[in-house]
Image 1: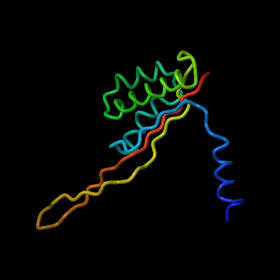
Image 2 (image 1 turned 120 degrees about the horizontal axis):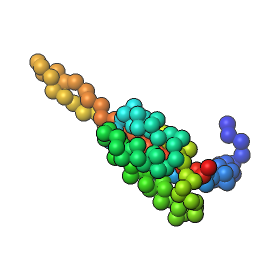
Image 3 (image 1 turned 30 degrees about the vertical axis):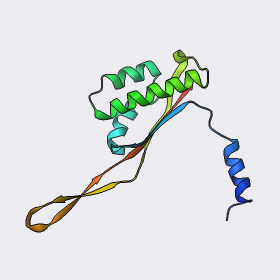
Amino acid sequence: MAKGHRSQIKRERNANKDTRPSAKLSYARISVQKACFVLDAIRGKDVDTALAIVTYNPRYASTLMEKLLKSAIANAENNNGMDRTKLYVEECYANKGPTMKRIQPRAQGRAYRIEKRVSHITVVLNER
């Protein structure tokens, strides 16, 4: 059982909001495993280096990360008033989303299942 009333629990949870600038991409049509290849390359880097990495990376996930990183930088500058030169990628992760199930016809009337995976990608920045 949770301690306290539901409204009290919500109040406590909302009281300690994360103030770091971030950007989130929900329902990206890419698997978590493929997204993590690019995320691992930019984690901990400053934003200019991270943008250079995703710009010249040939993977499909890097196009999504580039847009997401630019959005997080804009959030940091406009909403939090942070200096772009001091920003770095503090956290970046991909969580599993709902999987779309599709059918692939096979020989002799059989059907194989194809799973089209979806992920939720988050990039969190901070100042050094």
